[in-house]
Image (tube, rainbow, N blue to C red; front, side, top):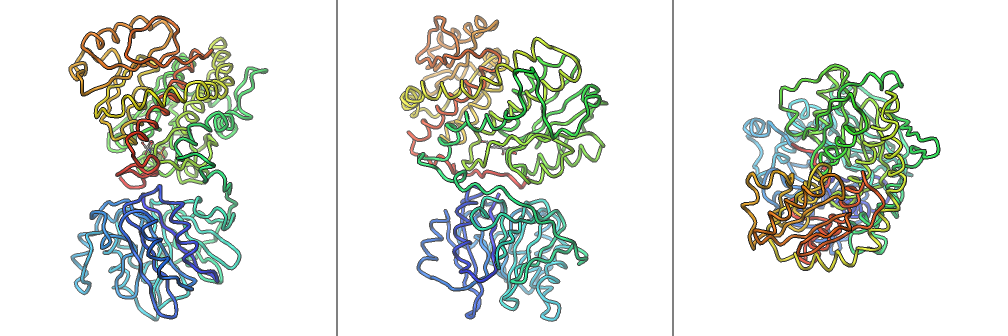
Length: 605
Ligand code: AGP
C-alpha cells in the first residue's frame, strides 16, 4: 500500500522522485505528491490521481533542489484528494507515510497547537514530530520521540526546512529500503524504484531509523542507540520492469509464464534422476520425513494457489493432514497446530500485512515456517525459517498471474520432495515430475494456439455484469482464482463455486444477467461435471466451457486446450482464464494494470 521515495545528494531530486513514484505506482494510485528543500525553503506539489497528474505540475515548476521526498497513495483515512495527499506538513516538517497510525485519534486530541487540514492519520504524525522538534536536538530526535508514542504500522520519510541536509526514514511493519548510490542516498518502499540508480541497498528492519545525508547513512533504534548497517546487492533487471512492447504489464506477465515458470523449476526438477531438490528449506531429510501436518497461509491469489497446491500435496503424501487458511482470518482465530506441523507461507510481494502477522504468530509458537515467495529480500522472505523463491521476476500488474503459476509449482515441488523424503508415492512423484517439466511448454502452446480465440470470445461476454465460475476437485480452487481475476480487472461481479455446490443455492442466480464459466477436466469426474453443466444449460445458462477434453460437450462457447498434461492441466486452464479476464477487461476499457480501489502489495490490515 502506498509508495514512498526520497533522495539526497547532488542530483536534481525531482528526477528520482518522479521516476521512482512511477515505478511504485502499483502500490497505490489515489493521489501523489513531492516536497523538495532548497535555498527558497520547501516546494510542496501534490495532485489527486496518478503520478502523471503530479508530473504535469512538477514539469511546470522545475527545481534544482537536491533533497526531497515523495509519495503515491492508497487511501486508508480520508478520500482521494489533494488535501489528503502526502507529503503532509506541520510547521517546517514534511512527512510521507505508508501504513496506519492506529492511535491517531488519541494523539490528535493532545496536539492542540496544530490546525489540522486533512482527514489523515499521517498529518497527526507530522504534527506530533513537530511538537517534539527542538533545533538543538534536531529532526531525528523529534522523529524518535514521536515514534515512541505511535501504535500502528509505518514506513516514513521526513524532511525539515530547518534540517535541509538530511532525510530521516523509519519502519515498523511497512517495508522500507535505503539505496546507497555514488554521492546519492535513495529511500524507497521497494527495490523497483532503485533499478537504474543503484544496486547497493540497506533493508530497514522494524524499529530501525535511518538518517540519510550527503555523507551517507546512519542507523539507530528507537532508543537512539546506533546500529550497524548491512548493505546488500539487489537484482536490478531494467527490462523486467518494462512492458517490452506489450500493451499492458498484465498481458506481458501472462505471456512470459513459460519463461518465468522455467526459472521457478530450473535446477530443482531433475527428470532423469526423478528427483526434486529445493535448496532453501533448511530441513534435513529426517526433519522432512517427520512432518505430519502442513498449514498453508496466504491472501487473495496466493491463498488460492495454496488451495490448489494442497490438492497436489494430498495426492503426493499419504500420511499428511493439510489445512489452507486465509491469513486475514487466521490471525484472529484461536487456532491450534498439531505436532510436527510446518507452515507454508505464500506471498508474491512478501509484504502482505495479514500474512506477515500470521507468520510471526506461528513462529512465536515455535512452529517451522517455509516461505513460497516471489519478491527477493522482502520482509516475509527474511523472517521465515526457510523456503523457496519462485523467481518469477517483478510482477508489476496489480492482478497476480505468473506468481500463481509459479507458487502452485513450488508447492508441488515441496510435495514431491516431502514424498521422496518419506519414501512414498514413487509412481505419483514420477508423474508429477514429468508433468512439471512439460508445463512451461504446454503453457506456451496454449497461449500460441488459443490467444486470439480467447480474445474473440471475451468480447462476447464483456457486456455482462455478473458471472459464475464452477469446477470440481482441482478445478474448484481454479474457479475461485478465475472469478477473482475477472472481478479485479473487469469489475464484473463474479463468484467461484465447487460445481457440486451449485444445486445447493447458487444455480438460482442463472438468468440472462449472468454468464457461466464451467471448468471441466477429462478425468474420472468428467461425467459429474457434465451433469452440472446440463443442469445450468437446462435453466438457460450462457456457458463458456474451458476443458482439456475432446469429448462432446454442449455449451454456448467451448475453449478446448490440447494438452498432454493430466494432473497439472488445471494450471494451464488457469492461464486460459487469465487471458479471458484480460481481454474482457480490455473490452470494457478498464485500466487493466492498475484496477480501481486496489494496490499490488497490501501492507495494511
Ligand atoms: C491478486 O491478483 C491480488 N493482487 C491480491 O489478491 C493478492 O494476491 C493478495 O493481496 C496477496 O498478495 P501477496 O501474494 O503479495 O501476499
